[in-house]
Amino acid sequence: MLRAERLRHSFGPVKALDEISFTVQPGQTLAVFGPNGAGKTTLLKVLAGLIQPQGGRAEVAGGRRAIGWIGHQPQLYAPLTVRENLRFWASLYSVKPPADLLRRLGLEEHADRPVRALSRGLVQRVAIARALVHDPTVLLLDEPFTGLDRVAAEALSRLLAQHAAAGRAAVLVTHNVEEGTGLATDVAFMRVGRFVHFAPRAGRGPAQVSEEYRNAIA
Amino acid sequence: MRLPELLRHSWTVAAKDLLVEFRSRTAILSAAVFVVLVLVVFNFGRDPTAVSNVDLAPSILWVTFTFAAILALNRAFQLELENQALDGLLLAPIDRSSIYLGKLIANLVFVAGVELIGVPLLALFFNVRVLPYLGPLTGLIALATVGFVAVGTLFSAMTVRTRFAELLLPVLLLPFMIPPLSWAVLATGRLLAGRPLSEVVGWLNMLAVYDIVFVALAVLLFPATVNE
Amino acid sequence: MPAAIWAELAMIVVGLSSVFYLFTKDPRLDRFAASSAEVGTVFCAIVLTTGPIWGKPIWGTWWTWDARLTFTLFLFLLYAGYLLLRGAVTDPAARARFAAVIGICGMCEVPFIHLSVYMFPTLHPMPIVLKPSAPSLPGTMLLTWLLSLGVFTLLYVGFVVQRYALSYLREELEAVGDVGGGRGHG
Image 1 (cartoon, rainbow over the protein chains, first blue to last red):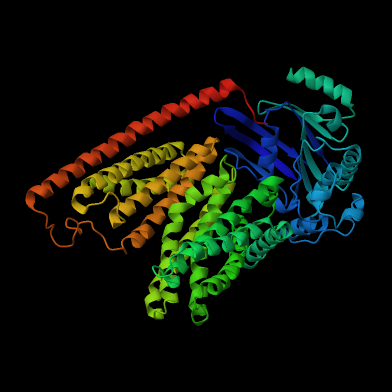
Image 2: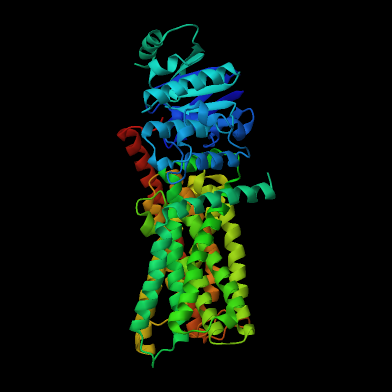
């Protein structure tokens, strides 16, 4: 579903991506852990097509239409209502928002309130709704749990599980190993633009993965 | 993905921009206040025996329109930065040009709104006869507005991420506004003075050429301003 | 006068190298464009200061909306905008892209400024060298003019080369400074 081939990208002298290659199959959720500056966001942006890599190729089955992005910025218009926001983003993908989307995220009663008037937790849930409005088959998540309240975090975890169960792919990037491990089917550690570990999770728990991560990165 | 989809997405972007502006209403009010202010000040400032209304009218008109345009341009991309919505736009399966065209259309509608207020008010306060020339005048105003809003939209995409964005944009735009503005002011003057249309056609042609060149250029160059 | 010619030509150089930069993303082209722009600005400034100085005793006023002077003023504004934009953008890749965009727009704007400005009556001596028929300038004046054109051509090339070398060195310095100061990507 998603393939990266020898990706290379530098910002001046700094190598953000240094010959990275991997594939993600349907049903897999790849969690990439790494410290700040390792190149994680750059990797995600290259996969999404936001950055043209200086070397190598990234391919996502279905192209931009199939990609959903959840980051720490909501990508919403504050003066517009939830419904108007969703309708706008959906129309860019030439679809209509799915009828049950608001319900699945517990947003029905807020549908006609402007985003500006919502609490932070609600805004985050709307942001998730926005990412899913076109029913993407590949999810790219950039530190998605940062600052999420408990309700939103649970909603997100639930959605990711449903997404994987439906045979779809996701790549999750974070520096919080505990949170990310539970959702992953495959785990990778990234350091200075390279993968220093890439393997299926194979039943390892968060504590164990954290330990291995600390050993690998330190 | 060709023309019909391109236009549809552009219209979606434009509609969204206009809806946002309609909700907040700050920019249009500032522009309207400015129009009235300028008209009143100029009225008190002039000496009726030395300068006739018709001579002064074009400059006043275009000063107010330019201000409105700068106002619109400043907020056009600011809107996208606030919640990183621009990334969302870039991720969507739409042509980059749709983003530019959508912004352009929204800006034009905004400035047109100010122009719709400004012209009747000018005619009223300054006792200038506008109705007989309404057709060519509208065409003239439209052509000139497209000229500097097209370049302005392109530049605002770049300046919005710099430190002195609101200051930098007018400074960058100044040399690009001078040709269409000077032609517009001259032609407006001739029109309102009752000159025959044939005198004005030359300027209309130049404005049209300017528009075509710079809209095309902006559409071509826009991706360079947003891609990484 | 030759300064004015080169000021205008420099803008065309900026525009063309910007076009090539956008296609190839070669940073050398960007540096070249920037150098040409700075030299162009200087030449504009020369015209704008020496022009009125020469003109005052002859025309009786410091500034006039004379065609050639006004044209150079607008050209100067274009250059100033270009350099200001460069100064305001910190990310070098973005800076190069943005500069290329405004460089190309500037180059395309020049013919329109010509049209605008030359519609006004001018106090400047009418073109006597670049006429379709043979130049009608008296022999010695023609020689002087050609000589100063040659000098300014050399000056342009010399300044651009110098400026280019300087910006190359400066960028090397920036790169080292960046790595030393820590990384912020990821």
